[in-house]
Length: 137
Image (tube, rainbow, N blue to C red):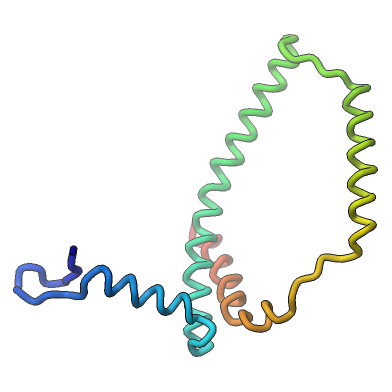
């Protein structure tokens, strides 16, 4: 098993990777039982990483969507793609009717209050961390 050690050449052995993973998993699984500041810190850490990667990945996604749109417009202009506008309008009206029927059957989306109240520190830290991640990206 690989060992983690700051002083590899000194003969002192560090913690085994399995021990570190077990410690991290113990914290994640029992996070609701940890003190509020630990929950806030874990949420902020994960939020920061998520915000950073969403910002960086968002640029790639935006560029991909933009280039795809330009290629589609070029293909339509050159006649490679033809659109049947009457069929599109008919399908959109049918889709709108089916969505409105399903939405009217369900009045609201129910989010369990227990989930939010049990994880308020983690969620608050995550939200703050995401804002930090957006700003550092």
